[in-house]
Amino acid sequence: MDEITRRARELRNSMTEAEHRLWRELRGRSLGAKFRRQVPVGSYIADFACLPKKLLVEVDGGQHLDNARDAIRDAWLRSQGFRILRFWDHEVFRNVEGVLEVITEALKDAEARRLAQGEAPPS
Image (cartoon, rainbow, N blue to C red; front, top):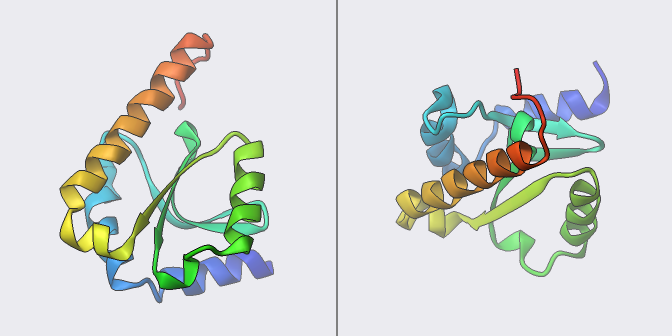
């Protein structure tokens, strides 16, 4: 097993409370799309990913405030065609319905872009 896969597995076993809260809502295609948790993407690990829609969701604590490494990471992920949604831990706890609405809209936008580009549906 390579290092990034090992680290992703560790992160799946030590998710934050906010990540657990959001995962309960995302799992099982509850938004009409399959999400995976703690997913390697290149040399990075995304908290949640809907790979067919190229949508990544990050749940951040205070350590991510003005984090230069996050900016570099996000720039690379965007260059690979991913859209990144970031939510603070407290947003997930206080307004999970609002967070889910934003994610749902992003999924719809991704589908609209795919259709506009004439791509086949993801399998």
